Image (cartoon, rainbow, N blue to C red; front, side):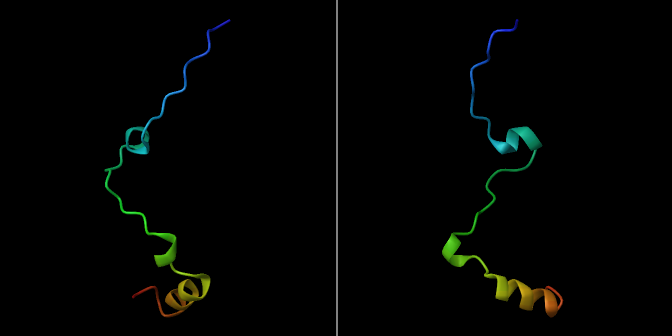
Length: 46
């Protein structure tokens, strides 16, 4: 039986080879469903 491994935090950038520094919008600044729907209806351009 293998010994249990210790859990270690690994940044997603190390798992998937993506660059770090991607900004994540604050929830107060994210689009609501109605805004997304309007953007899709007009072709996705802002």
